[in-house]
Length: 191
Image (cartoon, rainbow, N blue to C red; front, side, top):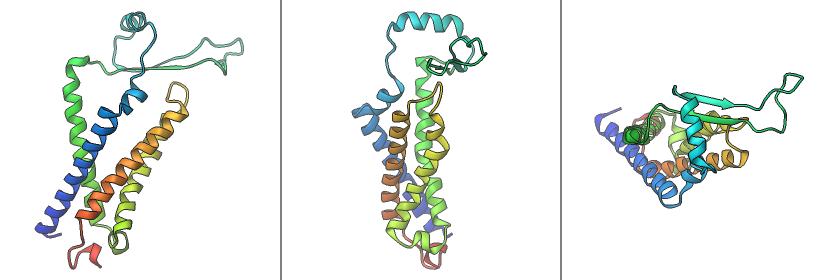
């Protein structure tokens, strides 16, 4: 891959990152998507917070199950709760945001590089290049989102909503990257 083409790949990947940042700002910041899925309010929050603070002192993900039945199994209809404590407070939110922002640019850039090294059929048409990124979104859904369902996890409707969110986001990335990156004569994509 020549230097000029490498620059095209990098620019297309960074444009994909900008698409993810804008998507996240609009969907989470303006429409409140993340808040509706991950930041639901707990009734009696002060009391629950006090109990959690007294009992969960080490970072980790905890599960709070109902008491076992006489048969030593969990009751089928009783809820299981998941509690996650990262070991930090609101003061370190900026660090988490910086790491997230870096991943917004790194992931599409890696995806763009992967696309640039694929065979000619994958990189030869606009729809195929877009689908390449949609497939990345689908892969993330299979590996990440679907595993979030179950006891102590997300309800099925939230998992489905997260899955659609990820596929749409990566399709938008694909639309921009596919528009920007074109095969260089003699490259793998041009074969």
